[in-house]
Image (tube, rainbow, N blue to C red; front, side, top):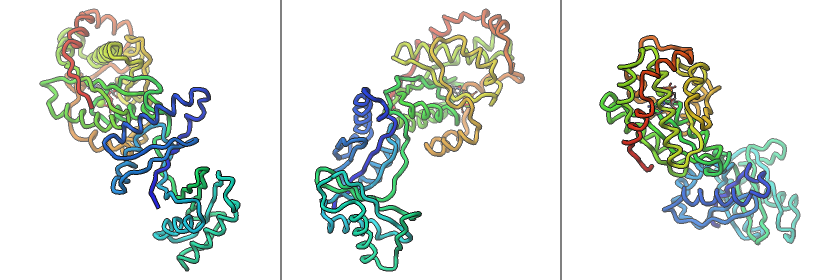
Length: 385
Ligand code: ATP
Ligand code: MG
């Protein structure tokens, strides 16, 4: 009996003629996620099989596959010759650590197999009951678990029970590349994950205010970046030294516009980096009304300095909904570590909550915008994660 992993895809099979593009992309992403591990991948209709791996690597492989977007579900399966005794042996093995009610469901793709599916299900169910007496009862309507018997056309049968839910969505790379504005907070990593789920490859931009924000703040962002990189099939992090821009704003503009101005510069610099490095969109972790810089008026102000689409997947999320996903993708514990963000440096006592565009433009006219953007772009640290 050999162990295999069934990998199922969902949406990409709705893609008609482009299907092969998506299927091949997903296969490449799977291979990249599992690089360094011994395995074979077999492409079947609507699914893949991962096989020939060392059984000790099973948990590791599953944990990596659960970060590959485009994968709908996984199942650990036993692969045996299509022979009643062998199938029964596999089914009994699967049931050994279980109790309760069950049923057997057969999918008979191999039309030459001598028994019909209902017949085979009954036979295998009977053999399980016989081998593990008093442990189970059959319940075909509401069983506590189902043993699936999948008779393949190649003379092999997959026997499995239970599915593990994957990321879902589309394979990374199928929706272009987005530049995520990555702070050390809770929201932006979740925003990045959500765009990966829809097939976006990520690059991240972090604004750092050395010496006001220390090395620990940067390290924290690198830790978050590494976690996201697993969903993004690798990721480049651009660390922008933002101190000079902030000092200029602080010196020349009215204090209450500090955050409004910073946001506009962050957006401009992110767009320029995206243009230079093949990005097509900007991603932020903004959520409507969460803080002063995330009112409709503030978003209008920061949005108006860029031409690229700005994706804000959390715009309608409550904090608790975001935290739930942050926990799922294991970024929450890192995000809540104490740190200073560049936005907390020079924080005004009373920031404008609903900035008026005429006032914003008046304040900004006190600065040499292009020169500040250029100076920030001259000294960007590039980290491959
Ligand atoms: P987060 O939890 O993502 O930090 P937040 O709720 O703290 O979000 P803000 O600090 O107002 O909200 O930031 C809004 C968005 O601006 C962030 O989600 C992120 O996309 C971007 N951002 C904020 N600070 C930085 C930074 N230092 N570097 C890069 N992007 C940033
Ligand atoms: Mg923040």
